[in-house]
Length: 150
Image (cartoon, rainbow, N blue to C red; front, top):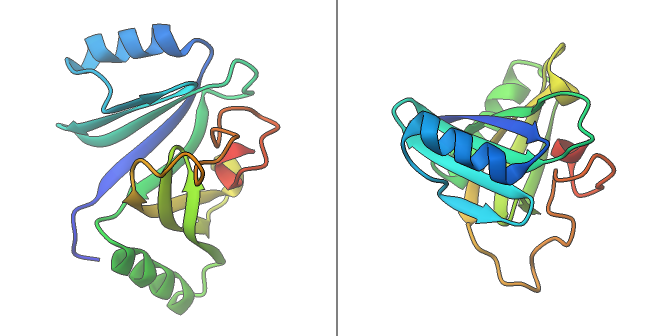
């Protein structure tokens, strides 16, 4: 895994508009991507992908933690390393989540939201409407679109 990496912090917010305004002021830049119920900020300093999900019923401000990797090869390498270390993990290829198509691996880690960290790469940042998930992935607590939505 030698490609660029960026930590991901995914938060549940009660009002996306207010949160986008506040984080735009905090970081001095607007979101890189904004969709109904969803926004993300790609920051270079610090290297962070801040993801906001409008989820007024979230039981925690923290939705999930992740590491954005540079390529699908990096995701496969992470899965191989987790397997070699005997760590429980699950792989999802071409997963449509968060208004993007991603390859990802979730590695089990106790005492974090969802009990796992997400290691992923974005394959397509704007999939065609017929490929997009109707659920907005992670936007609602009862969404069934994937692990980050629980």
